[in-house]
Length: 280
Image (cartoon, rainbow, N blue to C red; front, side, top):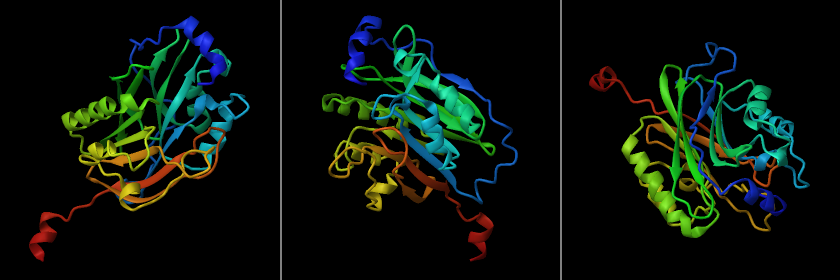
């Protein structure tokens, strides 16, 4: 958040974690025409939108809509989403973006500013069935993970989006909390993605790599996800549960934020049938 908003922030809130839970809105056209997930890849994006603000501080969801529209993603995870805050003209940003892209959405606030909130969101061309908000350990600023269940052509796909703290001292506890959650849930098809505020070489990420795949790291894809750096930095990541297959990934240099969106194409792993195995 920009420093000029800090006095107002301190006046409005003591950085409390919202108690209202996640919000779901299925507003997109019917998904009946969507292709089979066995035949065509699923396009997934994670994007820290910085409250839809440009470098000059002008906040407008249309900037983000234009950038995301060009990616034609099926599922989009957003971080730093403003809802009814003065710095973004009191706009419900996730609803504006979802309507602009004709996608369903779930929103999970991380901070309650009394007059509005700030948090993470998931947009989907597929129907959203459920959303759960999980608080993460944090001392500096409240952080959370949003667990969204999508009806992916008849099977649940869990999309877990988070934005970890800016303080390194918080990372270990936050990573351990995510790791415990992944192990407890044991989802078949699941994606963990967001702004981790850690470089891919950070050994703490190996904890998550023990349960979920990090395809960009495995295949040594150097994806620059931060705009204003002299050297490429990669802090936005997409992890896949073991039964999802990686196809490719990119980080197009588009959009108003200080982050670039990260896009990944994936599909289900297809295992040979018992009949096929027995015939060999």
